[in-house]
Length: 315
Image (cartoon, rainbow, N blue to C red; front, side):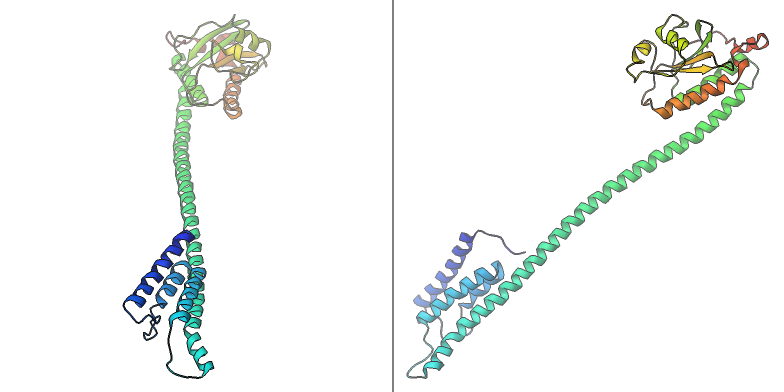
């Protein structure tokens, strides 16, 4: 690649070359600018500077070589034609100038080509880095999709198993089935299902992680707000946060067949889960399905036994 050095350093290198040649010419030779040698040694600085630094330095070296040549050269002896003398004297400087110009332009072209190649190489490096980042993101997305597909497949199997368990006659199996269905939608086991009977809000069952939760929320601000206006209460909303500060992060109403509040699904915590509209809508769909089963809540005396959960299933 073409060297990039300060102008003063280029001049110093050029002067050192000429000083060495002049010293040899004046000290060891005849002092006639090497007129008897072919090729002339003063070609050396011309070629070196033009090849290394380009046209400008090459022409400068050619000019200095020409000045030395005109001052000390001795190409003739005796009387000769004046035009012939001028021609013989000018051939060498002309060759130096033309050579410096051509070689310098070739060097400049090579420099530009190398610079273009360097830019292309840098662009390729950037493109390779971007491609590597894209491949990494695609790999991560593919891994997440595989996990999601596997999770969804497992979720379907779990939902089917919960549905089959709900068809069983004993209350414990039914409670387990309901808990598993809600856990699938809530993506957490830390929840409690509260039954609403008039103004009474009592816990009936919960997830495996919902231990130590209050069995009665009838006097809580969350229950009062839900009884007044059944709607999802979210801890990520400023208006709902005070209502859920002591109980959980999300409360979803379960409407019965009479459009009244029949139960409340209270999610206490969900690690790694963001409360989004899709998340709330998923729990609302489960709540709607539960609300379409009037016998589930024991409103009818004949089905009341189905709602009596064995001891230990109450959160």
